[in-house]
Length: 226
Ligand code: UDP
Image (cartoon, rainbow, N blue to C red):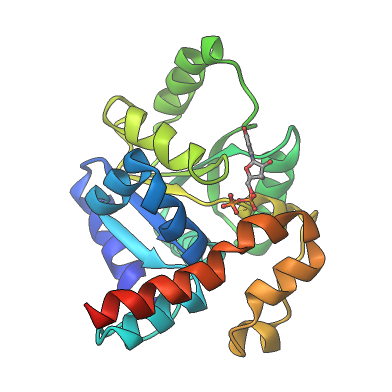
């Protein structure tokens, strides 16, 4: 996490548009069949290991990934730094009202933080030029985009050059948690690498997409053999 935050700060200082992805096992499996997503992940400026599965897979394959960097936690670290260093943050995504609630929560928890704009994530393609102009004119250092995987990654890859924002990150359900409409797993479950189980129990509608997890484990095991 410390290394990821350091890279984020270096990216902000460099002022060149960079895309950050937070990859978990579901996303990696989705990328097996979605060439566009796969290309985006492989070309991203930084991919953080957002899941116990990815950290396990790295270890199993002999790579050193010391710890999980959950998207939600990375965003909290960025907000903490933003309050201190005056970074400008834009919240784009979530159902109507959610980004506003997340902004209020962030302003309460990170005194002085500058959330320079919010916009919900439900829009027609006709609205996109206006959304892009709105983001550009707010001049953020960090753009957080919560449209779900893979929509957020694809939207960002398509628009990052013209947005000109130093950092753009797809953050999934992060605003929902900050707004208090979705709960994260208790810390003990996160530490026991059981956040996936909490998600499965609290959002059973995710069960089908979570079948990707056992498929991911099998894929990693078979990959190592070759
Ligand atoms: N969302 C959105 N626009 C869309 C589809 C989804 O703003 O067209 C939001 C949705 O309201 C939710 C987030 O994207 O806040 C996706 O959260 P989820 O936990 O499903 O993220 P994922 O697991 O896909 O990263």
